[in-house]
Image (spheres, rainbow, N blue to C red):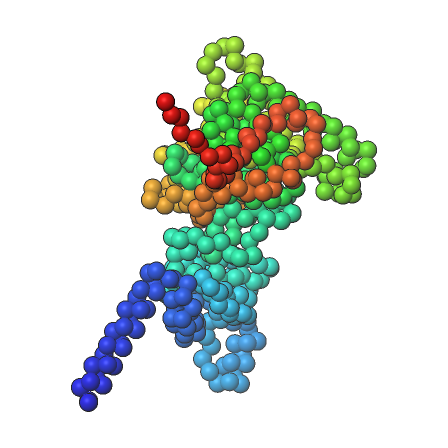
Length: 446
């Protein structure tokens, strides 16, 4: 009987260990909630002061505090680490709010994030300044970008579209009110098209006008025609479209001037024009020319794009530009246009110079990270803006059929805009579903 009990206990132990190992690989969220989070909390609590001390994140106490410690408490004066204000576990990691003592700044904590990661045994540590004197340590217990699962509360709203997952487990959102113009770069098979799919799927659910510019004969965007207010597939049509958009921008400026406001969002709802999002699939097709007769068309396109990028934000017209490269080799006006694009997302690129084109002028520290994105992780990118901050993101896999279905579902949201009517794409009729034949075939006899 004793041997049987020992055998059962050993079998149960091995099964439990095997289950934990399986969960760590196949169900990392479950593993983190049951094993990883309690272990990390214990490690964090026991080693916090020593870790902060060896990482150089402590300061000398104030004179009064040192006097009280030495003469009243009769203890040796120790360096002071940041005070822990809040510890909160999440489904992907741990959030810790710290109150910084005088002499420390968020950059000091961010510089030690890699050392903190190894000390507490977590996958990554991201430092975010929440308000003056406070920082939040966002720890992730596992690689959340390996199998992307967007947070449940990430839904399109108020010109904000969640399109990817950040490395710290939060949603990366494309906010057109904060970053009205954006540039997305990436090599072939890097996930740039998947990023655009997620963006179109989110925008299709909002009351906006979507304008597609796909000079690859519409192979990417023509499938989304039910939700597009306009679609052009040749550079000549693109030149005409941009001219119409510039004219509409000037008309909207007249409306703003008439009501004494500087932005369409300051207008009453019944007077506010419909926001317009222009999706350019490949910017190089609008810049490159094959003969001298195309130069005049190129000049019109470039001039219109620069004017839209500089001024169209207040008129509610936003640019979303994609491409493989975007440098001075495209020709006159390329770098001037790029300077107006606030949001930057760079996927895997073929050379370091392309990463520098997208990130060096807004977040130089992000260039090495963008240059090291592996090929086996399509959809991974580095997102940055003019604030200098950046984060690694990855878009969830969305099928083309799912985006098409979303565009058909929300086709009723296509606004009535007469100035875009000449460019409205034709929507193919849905093929009827197969069913039983209503007429019986009669065999032909001699």
